[in-house]
Length: 284
Image (cartoon, rainbow, N blue to C red):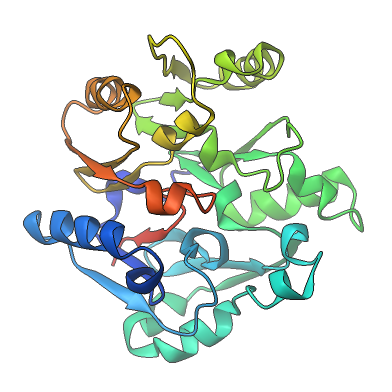
């Protein structure tokens, strides 16, 4: 029987790379102030090679069960420079053993190349892009699906990969509870993929599509879906554009019981990620 996985609404603690204060000082200051104001514990991880914690940290399924995977994504294998940015999660956990020792009681290691940006937890379902099959060509699609279902103990939905370098689902959707899922404004850039996403998501969720009434749609508007939710606090990326307020209003409407706060996030967005990407929120 499939069961609910720990999603953002159940988390109570958040971690960041120890590199974040140096790489994104203004963003770091805003986020930590918001977390302190809401009494949410946070900390920094050592032994990290870049700021994208979401990608290399394991997936929390239950309070004492983490799923570890092979963090060797193809986008970090093409050059020596990119390979130097590949964090070893084992070193992170060894360095932070006092924090996480108890969480490894039912550790699960899977023989799949994966990264956390391609795992969006949605109650009793995980949403991924089918780039996972491209990165695990040594296995059949059925084998990959079996390994994922066994590890996460929930349903898996696969969105079509649009060829974007990272193939992450956390730049496409975000779960907001009660069977509802937010979908980024893909219809403004590719109606073909928008309808393909809807075909998959409509089978399981009530889909709420973000929309922006602007004269010119900005490519960076994808970042709004990449917000960070820790329990009842929701931190939404802001770009200093007219879409900012519209994004906040729509996310507040989708999460009426949460405190939704805007965070100017251009420091991270310029590097290719946003607030979900730079964080690892868990239930301790």
